[in-house]
Image (cartoon, rainbow, N blue to C red; front, top):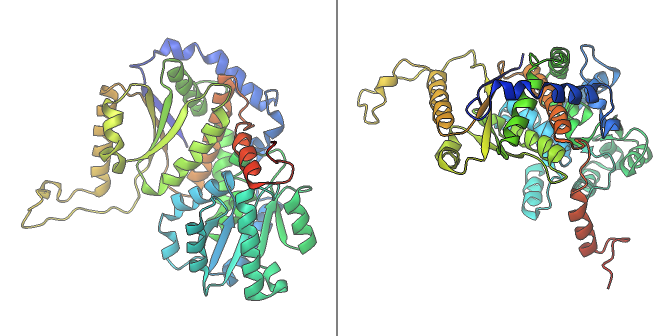
Amino acid sequence: MINVDISNVWGECSLNDLLGLEKEVFEAHKMLIERKGPGNDYLGWLDLPSFEATDEMRRIVSAAKRIREHSEVFVVVGIGGSYLGPRAAIELVKGQNHNLRGRDPQIFFAGNNLSTRAWQELCALLEGKDFSINIISKSGTTTEPAIATRALKWMLERKYGADEAKKRIFVTTDPAKGALRQIATEEGYESFVIPPDVGGRYSVLTAVGLLPLAVAGMDITELMFGAAAAKRDLGAFSFENPAWLYAAARNLLYRNGKKLEILCNWEPSARLFGGWWQQLFGESEGKDGKGIFPVTAEFTADLHSLGQMIQQGERNLFETVIRFVPPRKRTMIEMDWKNLDGLNYLEGKSLDFVEEQAFQGTLAAHVDGGVPVILVQADEVCDRTLGELFYFFELSCGISAYMLGVNPFNQPGVEFYKRNMFQLLGKPGYEIKQ
C-alpha cells in the first residue's frame, strides 16, 4: 500500500492552506472519474488494472513463453512511454544488471534515439545471438522507432529468412488503424493492442509494458494485481487518499513559488523509474505557460554533486522521495582489524541501517535548509509494488494537472521540433518555403 507523508512541507505552507484546496482536489478527481475534463477521450488507463487475467494478458504470457524459449535477446523498439515504461519496470524489479544474469533473455531497447554510436553498439551486441523484436507504436510512422524497425526487420530476414523472421516480430499498436497495424496485418506478425483511449505515457499497464516485462521473467499478473489494489484503495474522495495528498501538496508548493520538483530515489535501480515519472508529469503538466519542472536524482550518489545545489541553491524547489521497505536479506558490515578507514564503529550493523541513517540525516538537512520534502512510502520492491506505484503516479498526475487547469493528455508542444526536423529532412508536405 502506498502512503504519503507531508509532515515535512509545513515550513512552506499550513494545514489550513491544504484544507483550502479540498474542493479543487475533489473536482479534479471527479472530472477524471466522470470523464468530464479536457482530454477525456484518453482516460482508458483508469480501467486497465484488474484482479482477473484478461484474454490479452493470457496471449501475452503465451507469446513471452515462446520468445523466452527461442531467443537469447529481445529488442524492444519504441520511444517515450513505449521505452521508459518497460525499461523502468524491468530495471526496478530485476536490477540494472539484469542482462548479465543469464537466466532470462537479455532485453535491449532501440528506436528511442538517433545516435549512430548507440545503433552500432546494439548491432555488435546482437551479432551471433538469436533474437526477436517487439515494435511498439500507435502509428508506426514516428521517426526514431520506424528507422530502427526497418533495420531490425532486415537483420532478422537476413539471419532467418522471411518466414522465420515473421515468427520473431511482435507488434504492439492501435487495434484498427495506422501504418504499423497495416504492416502487421499484411505481414502476418503476431500483434497486441494499445487501446485508442490510452496515451503513450499512461500505457505501461497495456501490452506496451506487459510483453517486455513477461519476456524479462516478471509476473505481470502480480503487477496488475498491485495496480488493481491501488485503483481500489485510491478511490476515496478525501485527504485519506494518498493521491489526493500528493497532488494537493505539490500544487500548494507550486503556488508558493516552488517551481521544480526533484524525485529522489535511494535505489540505483529506480533511476529509469524516475525517467518514466519525469515524462509522465513533464508532458502532462508542462503547457499553457504552467507546470512544475520535474527532475530526478539518485541518492546517495547525487548528494555528492546536486546535493550542494539542493542544500544552498535558490529556494525554488521541493523534493518527492520514494522509500521502499528494506530487503529481507540483510548485508552486514564486518570488522577490519587494521581499521585504517576508521569504520569499525559500524561493525555488526547492516547496510540498510546505514542507509536509513543517511536518509534521515539528509531529510533533516534539506528540510532545515528550506526544501520541503514529500515522502512516498512503498512496500518492498516487487511486481505488485511496481503496479501500485504506476497507478498511484498516473492518478496523482491526472488530478494534479486538472488542478493546474491544463489538459494532461495532449502534448502539442512536441510538434514544433518535429515540423522543423521534417522541413530540414525534406519530408514531402513539409518543404521549406522559399
